[in-house]
Image (cartoon, rainbow, N blue to C red; front, side):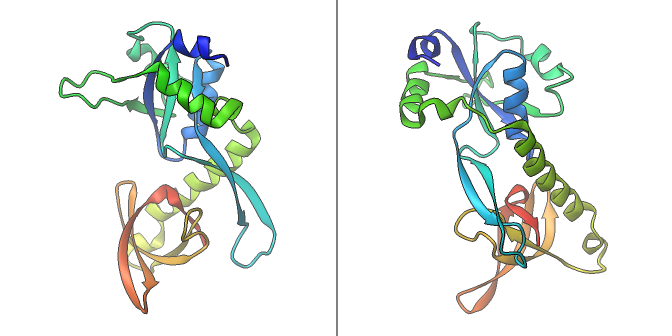
Length: 202
């Protein structure tokens, strides 16, 4: 995408539903919207008992993606009621007291384009996105409805990225999209709160 094209659009930060940011970006592109999703490729073992590794895309903005529109005031209702997009998007970001969607300066998108190059708008293949995000969603669903929640047992999980990648923790409870986990740290057990989407089944 050329810088001139970037400067001609109106850019907003959209929020995807948990573990759906890449699917949302692909769906927006299918609908003809220019969508930027800064990300990098990481490698991790398929499980802590397996030596083989798999590569997966890691979004730099968490559940957020940057989308360009030809008009300054997009038809938000139509967008979020689109049957393809409704299961994937949860809203548009506003940082003002009036609650109106916040525009991102096109020059900031150009700056990110210079930083990431063509990869900023080049999304991972759908087959990889389906595999990675469906696995994460299933893991999250299993945590939410698992037997541990009924008091029978606690579940184990592991971080799937970041400095604690592959570290196994014990899930104590779930509060919305956040998990309270117990992990060994500095010679003792500590409870920390992490986004559920950062955990995978151990």
